[in-house]
Image (cartoon, rainbow, N blue to C red; front, side):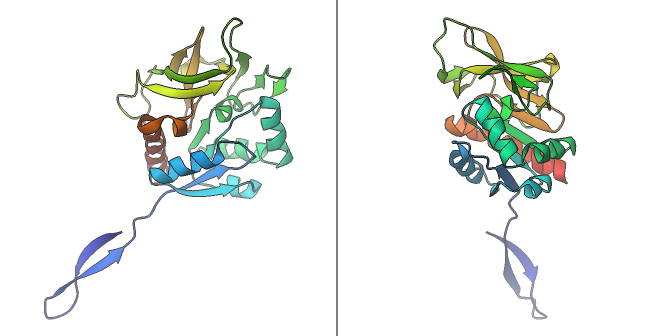
Length: 229
């Protein structure tokens, strides 16, 4: 809550008029992802008004969208297709409105995934999702460093070199190297942040990454709100 001081009457007295600050509404897509509630809490913590939906039209009409995700590519794509969400997500991104993907929410944007055979994904970003190299402990689980490759208005300053929380066995290998906004090393150098036009996505889980992770959500919401004006 805040206060706006306005003149109130002919006696020259002043009164306090309450007003409520408008929170940006962030639509989180519910397709059965396990990290849905932790993403919801993180977005609320940094000032977003969360709307969770599995309704296709609600996704099409949203102003800001976050696609969370954990699990396997086949399950993710089957759930998106079964709930008729794949098309609305593509349409939403194509409209130019701000979008953020998290973990599987990044991988689902690619053309195909090798996980569980050859699994077709949303094909928003050209490229494939491939398995981490043999000989490594998988899943890659725990804290690892992210080195920012290029500035992006959704990324807070000074996050390059910070550590974020990962849980994954596959990683995105985009055709366009220019979309990579951050790299991480785990036996192979892989994209841990991708960004193109109105979308940004992370392989790590900002909601499990403490204050530095929350700063990613805060930066995204601020950027998204500015784009909507």
